[in-house]
Picture 1 (spheres, rainbow over the protein chains, first blue to last red):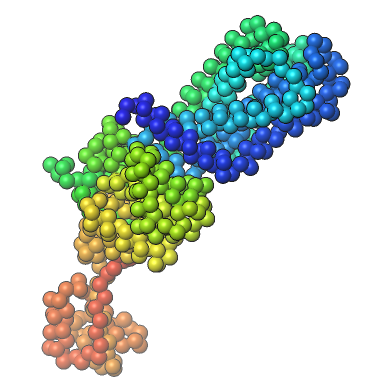
Picture 2 (picture 1 turned 135 degrees about the vertical axis):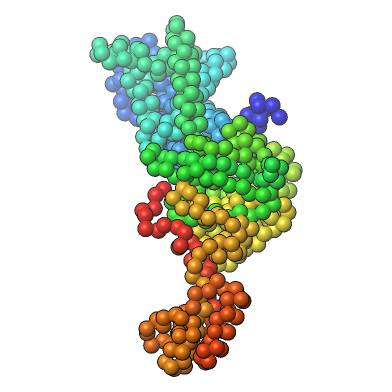
Length: 258
Length: 314
């Protein structure tokens, strides 16, 4: 079997294992899913009246908010991914995998692909709830496909970073804390209010942090607002984050058994 | 060269963690189809040896070949030939027993039908058929160990490392596992076993090496090791002090001085030495009420050879 076929076959096996975990113990996945939905409802129905009053050019605050919440739904998968990877590494079974003639990276790629699938399912559900709350995207079929491609790209980048964080963390509790900044970053971006409504220093940060171009790209695809070079910047961020996560994960993983 | 028959051959293995020297140059040669036992107290370096030989960690120095393949140059060929059951259970507690075995079958690329057949065979063989559909986290300690070993066997490894496989098992489960190990060796599998249980090494191993503070302090068969240490003696029991005194003079040994009326005569446990002692007793016309021969067991070997005074280090 060639190296590539081996890697694909073994990754598929590991993916099946992770999906089985997910189906059998959905508590973590459900709680992760709950958070963006709660945020959505909180911001639409509690803060939305006031926040929406300051926004022009959108039909209601929910339309402004939904793309940001959808991206948060993707980045929410970071925590369970990091925890799952860490639990794997701290349990005996990883040493078994390491002593088998398998594609070594498959342990990690299984987690990445599983988390991307989980992230896309979460976003689909969050979109559904957003629509119920009044979200009215203007996207046609092409834009929807593009939107999901963007979301998959973000999920791919986020999960590689999470895998690296899960490997670095010493305990599962530690692993659940490390990705929190990733989860919190959208708040300091254009998820809830436009960056240009922020104070100067924060605005600078909001404009240059990775989530703002991701959210703006998604907002553009779903609502027809201008995308400009945001898509390119988002893609560059995703590629950079994914590569950094992948390389970091590989170094820590290959550092070997504990 | 013994290269063709050696399942495991290592020379000068060294490993340190920080300032702590865990392995201080050990040589190993395990012929194929035999059981080799590495015996040692906690912290002697047993698990580190297994980790190095099973490609989990790299040695700082030394060469080792497992199944004829160099550990450094061809780790994947080594991995394809070996199976490891470590000290800590290496099962997926969230999957059922059967799913665990199928996971191994898939990773060994057995193919769907063959993998399922192998999983069911092993469930039966390891007395887990009824528990196959239950999540492994709910298994008892003995069942988890059996599942662990069954998972190791899915890919038909030729060399199996068992790191303290019976630690924490009840006597019945231990004996069950011993039988499984004997059956494997009967089929030509090589077993590298680490244990703290001397009876386990005595019972199973063809050859035993005693590891202490990162060095091999002795190697041989159980009998050879037992001969290495003093401790064999003939115990003579007398009915009165007069008989004791006569015998003590005849054998030129000093009585223990207590009122137990026994005399301990050093002996290597052989028939010849026993006969010599009896002849001298007859010559001294000393009547003996009772006699027993104590040979050293592996406990004596272990305690004599391993330095327990030092702090155990990991």
